[in-house]
Length: 240
Ligand SMILES: Nc1ncnc2c1ncn2[C@@H]1O[C@H](COP(=O)(O)OP(=O)(O)O)[C@@H](O)[C@H]1O
Ligand SMILES: Nc1ccn([C@@H]2O[C@H](COP(=O)(O)OP(=O)(O)O)[C@@H](O)[C@H]2O)c(=O)n1
Image 1 (cartoon, helix red, strand yellow):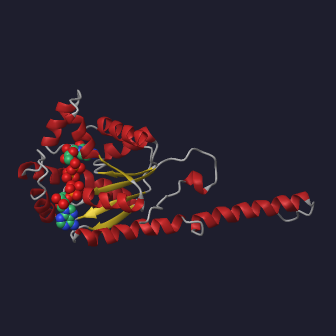
Image 2 (spheres, rainbow, N blue to C red):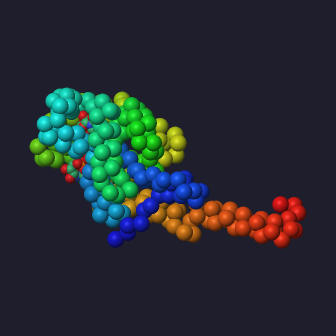
């Protein structure tokens, strides 16, 4: 079992004493692309805590909260629930978890989600996993899912696909434009998809290990500082 994935924050890389922010990986993809399935494997191998925005919203409905009815009717229409509600649920879940590495699945689903999360938590994702899957395959998977979800009917599924194309894909494109997306071909058997996912997490691990680039750079800076101090103390500091 590999557990190491700790994606260092800029604070860590600079060696400053600033409070370490949690590592967040956003897991995106159309409805039925296999986000939840793959997250379960990632948790098992890499020690993340997984939160599904959809599950948190369904939990809110089941808890009988005052937002429950509003959430239920929006989900039944395949619409995106206001960010205020979803971000609050995610923030609370992260705070209560005791972990500092999170997979957040099905979020952000639109630009409002993305901006609200950044503004409220101050956290930017370490990277984004994007499960790329053709619509016909996603539709087949959802219709076979059998989880008794009210929104897994053909009419709502089509609405969710439309919302995905209009609102969620632009978020993926935004993260692509800043080089944060790892795109995975999700139209393969579960085990094959996970091999690709594993490769992403393993390569991130490699980059932040003691002999990785980030660490080497900060070690070099520390050494340079040490030399300068020693020259200064000995009064032979010329040209530095
Ligand atoms: N690679 C795959 N091939 C075939 N079926 C899959 C694959 N990944 C997931 N499934 C199945 O498809 C359905 C949707 O997967 P799920 O993980 O719930 O998707 P999402 O979280 O993206 O909505 C589930 O019934 C799941 O067992
Ligand atoms: N960030 C999010 C995530 C889900 N949702 C709602 O929850 C529904 C189900 O999302 P989900 O992630 O559980 O399931 P999939 O559509 O990915 O299969 C969405 O269609 C939205 O109505 C939301 O409003 N905002």
